[in-house]
Length: 371
Image (cartoon, rainbow, N blue to C red):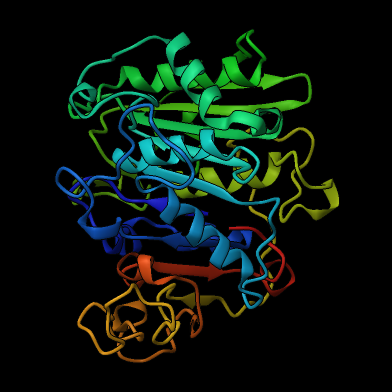
């Protein structure tokens, strides 16, 4: 699962305070946290803007190359049927664009306080466009791959006190996707009890939208949360656009995608819930003895395919060992160990050298689970 940071935020902030490790470990998921390429656009934002997106332009090419590199890394054992993308703010906009461009690749998308696809940089603070426009834009992005929307899932979350990106986009994004997933007829919804979600004192309102075969979209408005990533790790202020109090979105994402994935057989699921357990119920799967893996997506040594004119000894090629992955010692107290080897092409060197990857998983699942 790729998790994309927001504007003026760093991937290292999400790594340190996003509370991703417990979800990755419990559900056997590899989580990649890339930094936006080349400093991003407009205050370090991902370029989700407008309707002129292809798989090869803007920041889309970087996203797809990262996924391909991780998927091809045999040491990670990525399952192509269980690839997900999520993000905050502009990262949410980029995640939505990516999921629309490639529903064949992304089995699930997470949108945290993100604008609707097709909107511009000046339209974040108010709800612009229409549901029909969002549906048309997303479908146009998908092209010949639109049939794969039939098995895609979505998790949408935002704060009731968000004054950066209009919270109305939360409902708009849900309406766009439930219309696409319902083939023009919006999926029906039922209320979700937010208080039973994982996290620290979760509160708010929620909905689950389903088709005849089960849940497809979960939507949560978090009471009192501003423009932030819901870590759900404990009490405290919202710092670096991360909310500690409230639902744990990483755990929600891992659970919702793992349990409801339509592209795998039931027996392949990393977690098997009882039939009577509702979405968001406190069901903790058994965790066997594991040696979680921490891998930095940049640690591939000096690439032999740098951009033309770039020297292998150039400052553009950071040291492949990133001490921030596990401190000065490659062995963490959690049992994580650093992985050397890796993804990336010259054009993605900066992005990949700033990215972080967690593969915290049970051995039984870690070698075949998806990102």
